[in-house]
Image (cartoon, rainbow, N blue to C red; front, side, top):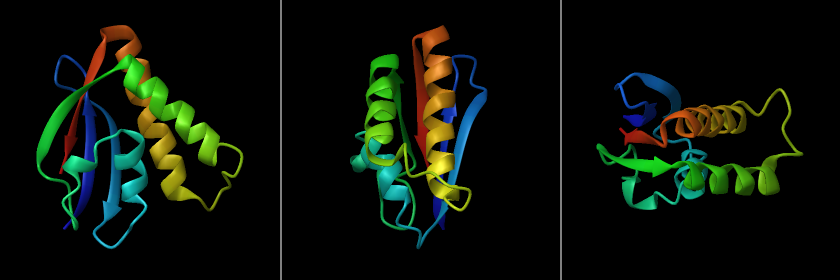
Length: 104
């Protein structure tokens, strides 16, 4: 069990990935930033997916930067993977208009 969150482009290729063990509560940061708490199922994601727009990723990255942007250090692996996930999804959404995210 754990949280495996993947972002996919329009061709169905994985463009972003974040992994959290079932006991790692930092997963809730990513769910919250994406306003996707309904996909959080405790020890894993719900197994469902949804589509996010560029605006949603911009909002998530803005909130991330406000909350965590200045406190990132080498030991903050979870925050770094959250930042990378959002940035990778946003870059693809800028090109394609949206990104499908799977919460496993």
